[in-house]
Figure 1 (cartoon, rainbow, N blue to C red):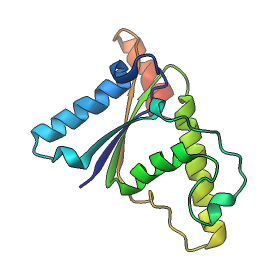
Figure 2 (figure 1 turned 90 degrees about the horizontal axis):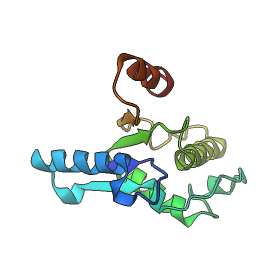
Figure 3 (figure 1 turned 30 degrees about the horizontal axis):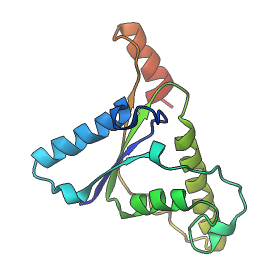
Length: 154
């Protein structure tokens, strides 16, 4: 089983020290300790990929790739190869910018696939995804309610 851990952090200056990326490596280490082969575990920090916003050009309808964004295609290839995904999302904005770009492009590819063939099934339709939301506020009932209501519920 191939598992993908995506860090949605945009804090490039933090690199592997960003909380989101550290959580991805923690998941990898826990799974390795449980006997999962490290070669089946991929940590993918979105901050390392210069994703370009979707142009809604529709050119992805022919081959399910973005003709303008090689970096997106690398991320998408990792998503396609994964059997399950852990998505680690920091809450310092509603949805981090690169994650928004990723979602928008996936949506366009899936829509274009449906336009091409109405029996099209998106590759992620039955792929398990675990979302781990986190933030930097001190733990309190008020902070936990804030994160629950504004991050986990949506």
